[in-house]
Image (cartoon, rainbow over all chains, first blue to last red; front, side, top):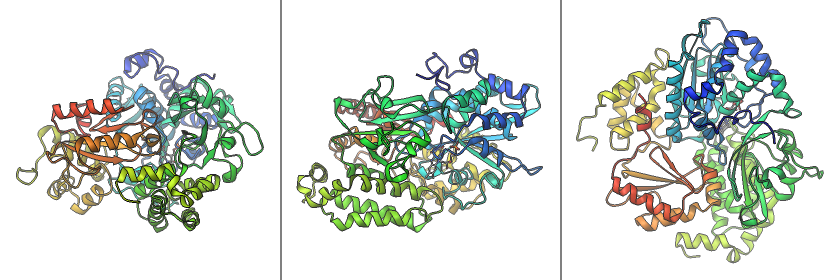
Amino acid sequence: MGKKLLLDKVGVAGIQKYDVYRREGGYAAVEKALKALTPEIILDEVKKSGLRGRGGAGFPTGMKWSFLAKPPGVPRHLVCNADESEPGTFKDRYLMEKLPHLLIEGMITSSFALGANTSYIYIRGEYAYIYKILETAIQEAYKAGWLGKNILGTGYDLDLYMQIGAGAYICGEETALLESLEGKRGNPRIKPPFPAIAGLWGRPTVVNNVETLMAVVPIINFGGEAYSKIGIGRSTGTKLISASGHINKPGVYEIDLGLPVEEFIYSQEYCGGILGGRKMKAVVAGGSSVPILPTELILRTAKGEPRLMTYESLGDGGFATGTMLGSGGFIVMDESTSIVKNLYTFSRFYHHESCGQCSPCREGTGWMEKILHKVLSGHGTLRDIDLLWDIQQKIDGKTICPLGEAAAWPVASAIRHFRSEFEDFVKNPQSIQDVKHYYRLTGEKA
Amino acid sequence: MAGSKKIQFSEKAMAYVRELIARYPAGKQKSAVIPILHLAQAEFDGWLSAPVMDYVASLLNIQSIEVYEVASFYSMFNLKPVGKCTIEVCHTSSCWLRGAEDIIRHIEKKLNISAGETTTDGMFTLKKVECLGACGYAPMFQVGADFYENLTIQKTDELLEKFRKEGKRQTYCNHLVDVK
Ligand SMILES: Cc1cc2nc3c(=O)[nH]c(=O)nc-3n(C[C@H](O)[C@H](O)[C@H](O)COP(=O)(O)O)c2cc1C
Ligand code: FES
């Protein structure tokens, strides 16, 4: 088992409160950063750490920070992406609920490194109760002198504010988030310009995930070098995984990147095996957007090597036989699961959440939901399966933001790996449990 | 109902509105529209009528259409009246895998409504919603700002009873204002 970097103090009673957090060594990274380091040194440590964005895309954080434009006289901003809405993902919620001060500490340290004097935490509207926890922690931090004017007498000023959303997955996409923060509909912007050049109110802006900003704290405390020693290759450090579905111990786990997938699923320390001792059928390893894999491909790559929890190993084989680490939303399905029905819940989700700007996504997600519904209700044809394939292909890569891909990949991978299940559905609907279930639920006649 | 009484925030809410606006640079007060709409929904019967949205626009010194287009984009804003207690059951993958449909069906039967409807006494609205970030604690629903997780049929019955007894309007918002 690896050392916990973010969750090491999570069990300490009262760690949500400032006094306890401070007594346990909290805010040491801010002290070190502001008093002993310069923004350049911090950036260098983050680069050395190899930290990659934990929001899903895995983009190197140090590199992102180094792109931030610094025109004189123009304010810059750091925005924390706490919109967490990717189905299967609930780690940011856990982190913020349990360790609100760790996020504030990470944000102060990072804001200082970026030269931002006003920073925001954009949190999804449904997390209103966590908004309160964070707001309380921010007030405590102001009172203790970690926020506000002339922090620690260094002359550095920082204001940190909460911003609440109101129910829109798309606002997790960073430019949609910025639009929302400006008080508008969450329509993603065309890039370039990237937020690093023109972000919030047209000013240079860095958007980072909750977990990414928290990881800056141990990087400053222990050094980028030490952080980079954890993990394998370009997957350094620890990662929070949200585990759900048919497992004995759903929950949030901090793992060292590089842990074998099989160990994660079956060991008592993590998921504790499949519910009821049943067989596993499939896994969505990185949130609803990433390709679903059948058991044999999630446990081992096509080359027969054990699959590891790293960006590279999960991606091995490309989309033909691999998947992605994504946001770390790990959904496990047992042998009784209908892949078609599961896909329907995803496609319905993406249709519901499409912002509507780009026709391929707005129309295509609706079509996919409708066709899957038709299949589920026992009216599907073989042609419908080909049509689904065709539609997802026509969305992929043809939209302003990656929600299009996020909607296309689950469809493509489900058909790629489980085509026969779709065919069974359309050839012999009477024998399919889900079709019967559908009619029982709706009261419609077959 | 909104319309019969004057649309005006309480003093406490107004103080919060001013504080919200101060979070943004001068001239960028529009950024406060979402938090203020949450507040308005909580203060004015749980939904946003056109006069309420016009009022929010006047507070922010922006056009009414700028408020309407925001209110209609985000799923947490109700543009029609809802029951005092809106039960939002997640039915996305992880929750579906762990029995969300059974919970939904049970509530539908118990309250004698379909998802999307409100009980005739105006007490409950049932909504099916997409992933709320509680996938590991499924099945679950949200009422107001609170999450109710690892639901069973029995637990669901107890909760419905509790909400009915309390009889109060559940909002997302008290949590936003109470801090101060
Ligand atoms: C449709 C969509 C939804 C997203 N949702 C989130 C989210 O909820 N949280 C998040 O941190 N990143 C999300 N992202 C990724 C962000 O656009 C962005 O890459 C991320 O916040 C950058 O932070 P990081 O580099 O620290 O990961 C989403 C992207 C897309 C396309
Ligand atoms: S799938 Fe229901 S909370 Fe995520």
